[in-house]
Image (cartoon, rainbow, N blue to C red; front, side, top):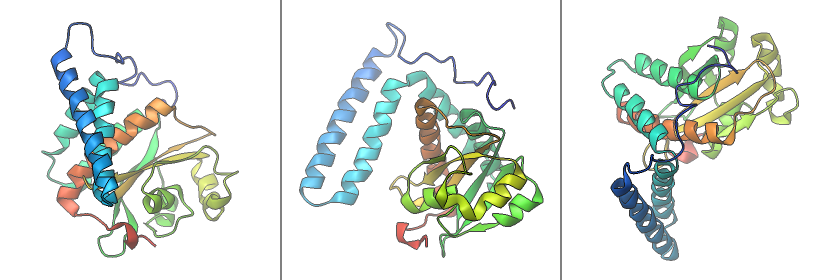
Length: 240
């Protein structure tokens, strides 16, 4: 896969619903988003912060479906195909393959969070040698990109690992493995509880566009829910 010049499957997808198509669905989604945001506001006013955040996450993805309707359809189709994959390793590998395309990367890995400790373990990878895999066999710190993404439950981008102070413990393996930039996106269940992290790596300083990152988050949201049904989830306070 050409990291920066690939003809990605979503790149030329229109940003809006074509004229005369899907207006009824669009109206339903707009009403759904408005209802969810009102519900979240009421819950927050009653002190139910966790429930409010969960509904806000749902509203955010309804907004994504409104802003990127045809991309959303393709992401749903890609995720739906994973539901019929029985072997966990194969499921993780196929999910990683799609993320690599979305992220314009040719190397990456998908880690699952251990149910007891919350530590991250590689379930699928592409493009790395044994030295990298040995170094990141188990991640239980927040120096790495994946560790930080897991701890904070948020997508993380390190445009250049050689200038990021927190990444210092892993710079030697990054140099040996030939990557300079990395993005990591949490995989979570419907309630936002950690399932794992998917990361992509780049041979030179780089940061995906805001749109690409948003699309990656949406696909990761779908994949996280599928993985949660197979492996369970980790409570947020279990990651060291």
